[in-house]
Image 1 (spheres, helix red, strand yellow):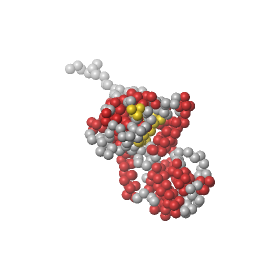
Image 2: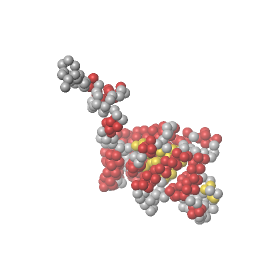
Image 3: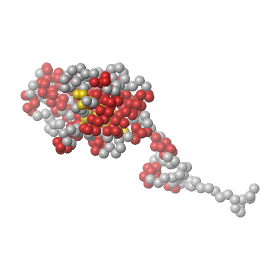
Image 4: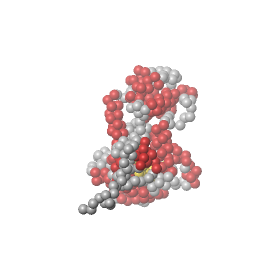
Length: 394
């Protein structure tokens, strides 16, 4: 990634295609991307029992950019070891293909995963390309018709053990949810979890908020999985507004044009039509750059920015989907109280006293309170004596 605060001056002397390629390759290490990258990096260094990682966010937030960033870092970190073990791969990434029949097909997934792993053999024959042809001879092959899906699965397990990648990254993983029934839906995630566990390879599922449907299928899955949220920037937050403006300024500085445009002046419009997603903003500015370079103009003007902006109806659809996903991540306010009651602990009262009591770590029987929780003049909950000289036995 470029370290300059603007593009190198000699880029302007390059052909249009190279100037466009420069901007497309440029990425901004903005706060949400850096935070998600750091969290995932820590999990991959020490999974602590986690087999699956769900990395999700709205469409166009920059998940694929994060995947490429992770791949580059893992390859750089593993380079000394890769020079000693030529058969090992630092990381493997692939994209889950959307099923054309409406139902996800595991056989196709296994073959594509084997190709991504650069597995030299599938059984005793050369590995097939995703289109079903022999890679060595480029002749149509009937190998997959002769081998059961379970055998292809075993070949994938063996390839993962031999290649020993730090992580197996699955982009567009929401396509795995394309199943016909709830029972099969449970089978989907169980299949991936067992594959990750048997091969001791952390599988990172990268996708939209549709992945949230996988999280709460059973307690075992929740224990063996970790969630990472890559959110959009929220205009209600002062910090998010500043971060978005910083991203916009960085893109403005790296547009390889003769004159720098003033995008910050229209930051609110840029936020509106990108709904706070850096990926959408980048694609929009790329279309604008193509128009400017083809027209031969010196800079990106406001009319061109508005002309190539995503339509309001499209943005409303994207915003609705993003808000639906964000709403699923909101923890119900009564969750902590229900958890404490389920464990036999007294629910904490609201306010500063509750925070102080919770910080002590002391556990009280259900129905009792600390002395400091009583109001002035209020009796402590004690049992009154019964019987004695002042009471007649009946």
